[in-house]
Image (tube, rainbow over all chains, first blue to last red; front, side, top):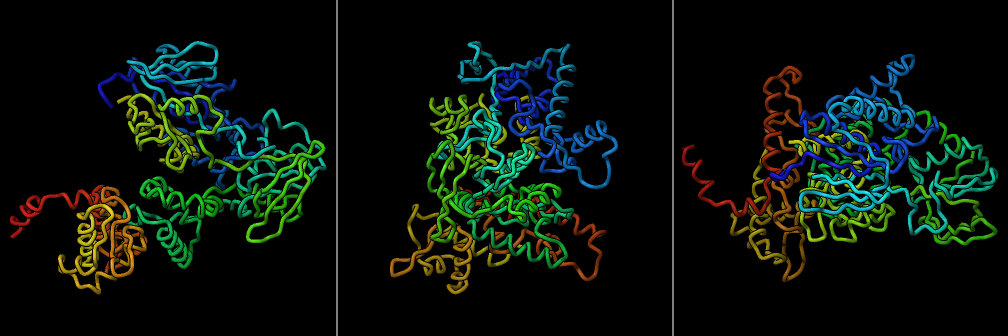
Length: 448
Length: 149
């Protein structure tokens, strides 16, 4: 940090990452600290992920991994036990995501109460339109015409909720365009990962009976969690900075060796987890690009697993033909009588399916071009050259210290980003355990 | 442990890092100027190519060059490819762990300390780029050696 004062910090985005950062900033004893949290939704701490109130939408990480506080890993598990003492037991608990939203809301309410006297925390429910650097810091312009000035701004806008611009006719589940559909009609879901699973659970709860066709390049379904014993690794054991194929070869050998010793792939994937960001950062851009193209789909189904009970339900639905998984590419969408005729090109085959579907849901996930996104404050920063997409365009280009890098390559001393927006630099930065670590590190630097 | 293989590999890479960007070097030239047998060097450069640190071109004008700028290749990353996990003793590795026949590793203080030593090795070597190794002046390296004698 420079000698510039950093005592007032505005956080753009009051979802999980924004609230988690606020909590870590306010751990500082600095009395002139001012934290302003800006959120466009009516409730703080929920974002896209934790706004669902469907009890079937479970966290994909057990309660013991979901603490919002970096140096208190059981913070959430304790809160959950206090709220629901009967459920505490030996087995890992996968709580509903809506309950996690309650937890973050509770934590924020606690912070507000604690800061009432000192006045260090302010919440503003408004959309942020732009962030403009000033001589002494930043000015954040809001949708109601007012603005907030601070010494530094942290972008914590999370996932883009807009549908992908290259998927005509597709809507996001729960968006305004997601109007009621004939319960017997066939529905197409683009994507076969965890978002597809969420969409299936929502459709199921709405009483949908028609066939659900789920399509992705490889048609792979995420694996379930099982109890395991992650292997112990140190960074000295892990090949860094190599080409992708070399790393994948090492990984496969390690899985084989672990299986021989009585373990399984889960133990390797989970043992590697503390090093994933480092591995990603050590790779040249060429290896990162190859990973996204060739390996990510396989990695995701092993790394991002679902609660066993949800896996059971989805597998049943696939067996009974309620969900049809297809490894295919969407090659055409033609509107027909208020519905769509879609053309799907099967993978490794000339076969083409033409299907009539009543609705197309976009569950393709996250690998989208950030500059084409629908979050105004981000596209505005890029358009003005104050930020630039990372080389793979997954998010904003940031330093490992979370400083936003401008179009001219200079790292900002007053504009930072955390959470999924920093995916290009951190890669695995969607899950709470990674975000809380990142938030704790940034908070320590900003309040130093 | 740093073997001769790891040492020769690093010497070859420093040789390549000293050339103008993109220029190919003959294996023979690298071998002669670094006093390495050509056959051994061929094997080493083959492994470095598989891991993506060097590129090669075949033919009369063929040879090797760095696949990336020298400041982006870390010494520790190269050593892991050539010599396996950084570990001062065979028992101080987690993936290529070889238990000692004569002690219980759970209570072995030596192993415990060696695990810390290897972390320190990794911390130093993973922060050191080929460019820095190339530019480190020989005098700086030679002075401590004199005191050893």
